[in-house]
Amino acid sequence: MREIVVVQVGNCGNVIGSKFWELISDEHGIEPDGVWRGNTRLQLERIEVYYAEGRKKRYFPRCACLDIDQAITSAVQSGPYGRLIDSNNIVTKGDGTGNNWARGYYTDGLELVQPSLDLIRRHCESTDCLQGFQLSQSLGGGTGSGFGSLILQKLSEEYPDRIINTYSVIPSIMVSTVVVEPYNCVLGLNVLMETASEAICMDNEAMNDICTKTLKISFPTIRDVNHLICSVMTGVTACFRFPGQLNTDLRKIMTNMVPFPRLSFFTPSLVPLMSRGSKPYYKISVPSLVQNMFDSSYNMCRIDPRHGKILTAAAVFRGRMSPRQVDQALLAVQDKNAMWFAEWVPNNIKSAICDIPPRGTRMSATFICNNTAITETLRRQVGRFRSLLKKKAFIHWYTGEGMEEKDFIDAETNVVELITQYVQYQEDKHRSTMEPAEEGENENDDDE
Ligand SMILES: Nc1nc2c(ncn2[C@@H]2O[C@H](COP(=O)(O)OP(=O)(O)OP(=O)(O)O)[C@@H](O)[C@H]2O)c(=O)[nH]1
Ligand SMILES: [Mg+2]
Image 1 (spheres, rainbow, N blue to C red):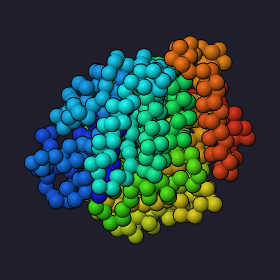
Image 2 (cartoon, helix red, strand yellow):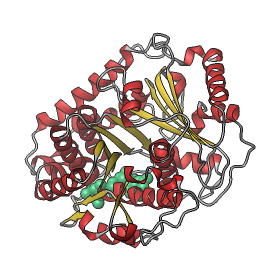
Image 3 (tube, rainbow, N blue to C red):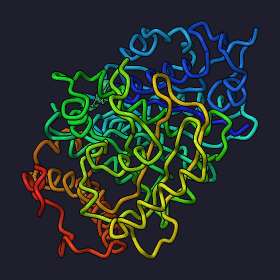
């Protein structure tokens, strides 16, 4: 079986990781005691991809929950499926990095790295044919980003031929409460681009907008936002977890979606959008799914896709539908909107179909897109990073943990290089400069 080891880092990484287990356990008929009480054997056919089988046919998440904050233990184990996660799968010590990337990467993180790798190694050794890793993190947190970076580097050294897929929550100024987040984010992006085979990026601001504008939730909570993130995670992974007509796996996604090393930052959309416990509010069909997939108001990362070109994309459909219908709908969009796509990549969209729909709807689609407009997000982060670094504000917290000022400059240079690379592969009509945005620029939805 092509197993995946799930690694959850920091508060955000563990909260969304735990929610992911809750949703997929429900889809696979696994109850909180680890026993399968489902309704179809299809639920068990690929159960080993995410679960390890224990004694008496009980199934346990193959996960490593890591945090430099002991509070995480209760957070991970308190949910409805908390009992599924054994204490042996949790590595924790201390009381958080205080939002300091350097503590996560250099000091506090060093104490936890060995037990964390031992736990991950134990999981890997019990697999038959390891496919790779799925890591969840926030790039704004000292642990999610700093310690997450350390773990990513160690994993890519120790398992160079395995795929590393991340779900990374990018900080957004409208939602942030932490002033040093731009530092943590750019330092984390610098490592992510070298280590992750595929990084699925979301930001809380775009998801808050989806909650208020599309789902009409007046006061969205973090649980509403997390529900969206985890719905994307269940959507992307559906074809790994269930047998289907047209399959995919982490490696196929990487091969089809990453045209050049480092250009591996994807933005996700999900259709139909559903809030917790609700039903879609419109009639769904394959053409309507495909049409909405490309609508920027469904995008969970705040970019304007019209400012870039789609280099590659993958669409995972769920529900009963014919591959021909899917192909026709995708071709129709590509024919009609050729300017959205990089013309030098023929067949930009990879599709997969899983017969089993998510709970509450007849069919759905999860779309991940390698759009050069991701530079908007990267530029925004670098712009905020620069305006802090210009005054050397707060860097004493980082240098006090062993970092050097040069590390900041190197990280910034690398992220700017990534922006340059993305722009190079886009026939750029909108920007003549590659300079990252200064603070304040680009924070609104205005066309430049
Ligand atoms: N979507 C979402 N975002 C979160 C959640 N928790 C925190 N964040 C965001 O993540 C960033 C803070 O990161 P945390 O994950 O709380 O920090 P950490 O990784 O535990 O690192 P420390 O700084 O050491 O505590 C901020 O941008 C928050 O808005 C969550 O449950 N869901
Ligand atoms: Mg924390």
